[in-house]
Every structure is written in structure tokens, then in C-alpha cells.
Length: 282
Image (cartoon, rainbow, N blue to C red; front, side):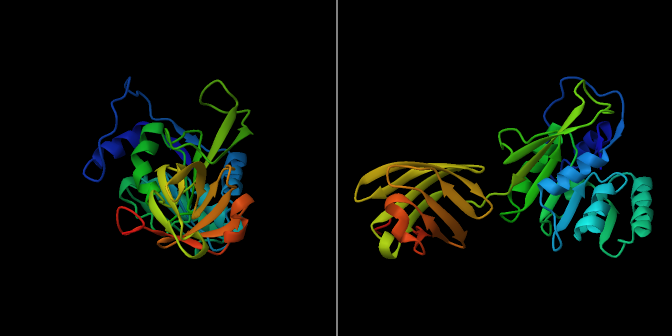
């Protein structure tokens, strides 16, 4: 994996038909440095994402293929590396053969904006902030629970779920001799009105969502309690309120209560269903 500056921007501009144009740059980029991700950062990216056997990792801008190969060799995953430089793709294929994982990984010369990400359970990247933001809508459409890991650069107002800092004494970019590794877990979409069933039939949930952050109201017979929470994958965890806390798992068009505390401790196993009308009594 490597950070590709001008080359990535040129690829991004060339794929304008597949995505919205990049924001204007404050100044032109004059060089095309190729910066390899240090081995300790590569390992931290895989560990933070909890990569394991059964995962399919897609590395966007795979460079010499090291993160895909390590994911297969050490963690038992399968993988795909996407790279725009043919020589690096060939180098990656040779390295995969030498590592004994060529049957579990692939490398392609491909525009990262045209890559099908639907099989991924983990997406890794070391790209520019502008490119991350271009990719963000597609990443947010992946299956809930998909892990996205970025070296150094963030996703704007989609805040990481976790961040770790790794020492990089020989770092060639910037003044700090550390790297940040950011992890996002793609959240399920829970915004809207949800109607209680069974023991919750007198309750409803009205939720607003901004990425993994959720706020809204728990309503009962005209009375409302403000709630806040976070979504990680298919799980919504509310913060403590006067009526207790809830842990809910999205299963299709239901939010199933898997844990309750306080006054809500007795409703475990019941569900809210997504409303089919403007209110829950229709």
C-alpha cells in the first residue's frame, strides 16, 4: 500500500463519469512521490480492523501488494489489490507467489472509482483526503459492519469509530514521526419512524441519523424522551436516559431489542418495526 498523490488525482479526474468532480485544490501538486506504508502501520491497520479468516479485503491503491498479502498470509483472509501502475501489479503478483498466497489474492490494474466493492468485508486505503471524500458515498453503501481503514487521512465529518497512533521514525511526509490509523464500521441506516410491537406496542422511536451518530425521541402516548446513540454495523446502542438504555439490532425492517436497562429491562426480545405510514396508528 502506498500514498499516490498526483497519480491518484489524475485517476480521479479521469473517472468523472463515475463520480462527482473533486473539490478544487488550493495549489497544484508538482511531484508524484510514492510512499510505501511501513510494515508496522500495515500490521496495525489489519489488527484494528480485526481481519480474520473469512474476510475479503480490498486495498484501494495497493502499491506493492503488501497489505493484501499480509492479510492472506498471517490472518487467513482473501483479498484484492487495485492499482493503476501495471508494473506494481505485476510486482504484487510475483510477491504473492513467493508468499504462497497467490490462490487467495488477486491484483488488478484498475481505476479505484470503478472497483466493485460489494464483496468487501474490509476496505483499506492510503489516499488523499479529497479522494477519501469521493469514495465516502460508495463506502457508506456497503453492507453494515464492513470495516474501512485509512492510513493518516480521515473522512471529513464521518468521524472514525476508533483511531490509533503508530510510531514511524523514518516517516518521509510531514514533521511528525507517527502515523494515524483510522477505523470506521459501516453503519446500518436506521433513520425514520419505528413502531413498537408486543410489550412495546405503546412506544415508538423517531430517529435522525448522521453517519453513525443517532438522535431522536422515544415516544409513548404523546410523551417524548430524547435519546442519543451510535450505530456500529447493525447494532444501535442508546445512551442512558431517564427510562434506561437500549441495545437494538437491525434485522431487515425491525430493530430488535437485545438488551435493556432501567425501565426497559423487561422488553428484551421485542421489536420496533419500520413504519409504513406517517405515524404508528395508521
